[in-house]
Length: 284
Image 1 (cartoon, rainbow, N blue to C red):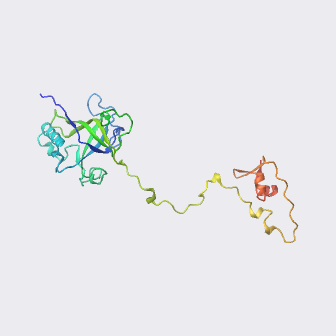
Image 2 (cartoon, one colour):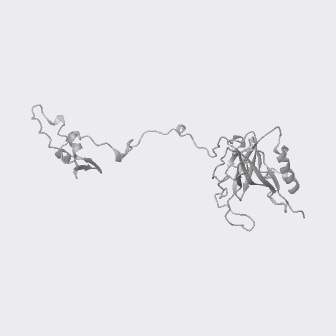
């Protein structure tokens, strides 16, 4: 029996439009830990790297008409069960960026940033790909290549189970081995964030709300009804009030409600010690 050899290809330069080269996926669609399904590691926790690269369309009507697409399509026809590649559920891992049909997540490719006008190749691997620059030199800076940058991918193509062509799950594996940074591009934000100015924050404040931090309130003014300076307390013929005593030592303070003030500053505002005591202030 002829030994299967995966197809090795170098992609055209394209734009990274989805996923990450640095952060693997560790859970499935149901948020359960991702597991290896077969092989020596079957049942063990797994981490899968996924990303998508958009390749600019030309005059071709299908990606299968491109130079790289012809080779991928031929491998699938040679290795898959007869007629299986014509099924709508055959997993090519290559999509039309202008497709307006909603997918299983109710999203349309034509609405996704960077997709329209491109063929989108979706790569995945359980082994972190090598990351290099345009000169094939290693790039060690974590997170250097961001969604929106332009890259080139060296990858292998394999049918998911070439030894058992009657398998129900038909499709290809597109495994990236080396990713080369080619150029910067406008970064793509993969998760939508609402505009704070468009939300409409604000409204009537409930009782007890203060626009000033409670712990930073200004020193209170003397309470009018308890102040000896209240003009309603005196009559026109009343004698002048005695001069306030000399300010006490600056070390003395008064407190009320958990706040503390210098006694000298309160006296300068017109308080006397008797008035402060009557208003419930404590001398310390």
